[in-house]
Amino acid sequence: MTSAEPSAWAACGYEHLRCDANGQLCPTDAYWRVWLQRPELQPVDESCDAERALHASLLQSPGREVSEHEITALLDADAQANYRLFLGFRDQLNQAGSLEAAYVAQFQAGAVQVPPLFLDLVVQAIVCHVLRGVDDAWQWRAAEMLFRRQQVQVQEGRVLAGDSEVLDLMHETAGMGAVGRLLLQSGAELPTVQLEVLGPDNGARYWNSLPGAGRFNFLLDLTHEVQRELPHGLTLTMNRAQSGLKALAQVLEKWLLHFLGVVVHIRPEARVEDQAWRWHLGLDKEASALLNDLYTGVAVDLDRQKRLISLFSLRFENPMDVRADVRGKPVYLGLAMAANGQLKLKPQNLLLNLPLIGAS
Figure: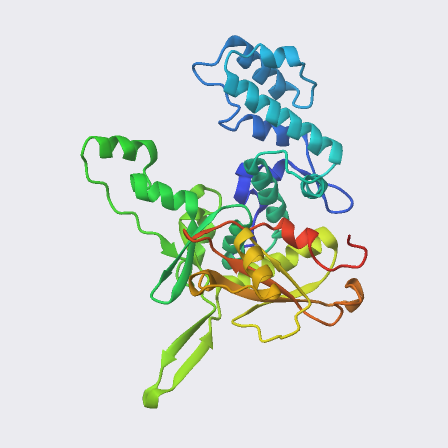
């Protein structure tokens, strides 16, 4: 298996970003042209002349100022809204100077003002940068969780995460998109599309699918441990050597090193028996609420407990990076799914909520 190429996730425009002296990703005109070619901004047959002219001029000069008159000249209200969102985000990012600075600033400012899709594309590019040179298929698949919503199912004791958008498409059209919908409407039977669980036998196939959308067809096994019944009523519990949880922990370690410059060691935990834990945070909305309730002694019913996919312990390599009242103690992280099985990671939680020296 060869080293990962940044162009593996070309849709996010990573190869068109410039890396500054601090290793941060800076936008270029070519990067903004990738955005302009997205379906939200690309002219369609019904587009008016003013929309076509605006789009053509921005492709020629992506950083130029656009007047309000040029926006209101667009006949389609959705087109007006899309261009306002794009231009506002473009200006914010250019002013911030890097994708990393713009990303963190969105959350430090309070209510996020840009669409989730914009942030996901930024995270995708940053993750591609963080994983440059990594040739581990499990880390690349786990990294998708930072910017793609997952649907989690428990099957025969295995916790499997699949790309939510792909699974929805599979259920609606057997993965054949608009063609599948037409065939269904005509009464035709569609072939069943099988999703694959990423494993040693298909890691190379996942790797080869990275340049396209096919990578999202692979399920990630998030099972922490398996139990095997032995004779005489004994039960053997074994950790899974290639659990996606381990890969996710490795990605999060790299994420923190890139943004904060701190070296941490994150390990999945099957259980926590720390009666005096000092600090915790959720990697998603559900886990944040669940850990807060457990920490404050609020009763958590069994169904909600079962939504907790995993706990992690995070330890800092340099104890002096951490506040004195937490020094020497692990930070516990939680990963949980919603009642409907949905899971959307919030990688910003790690950047904003750790007990670092100097953090507010």
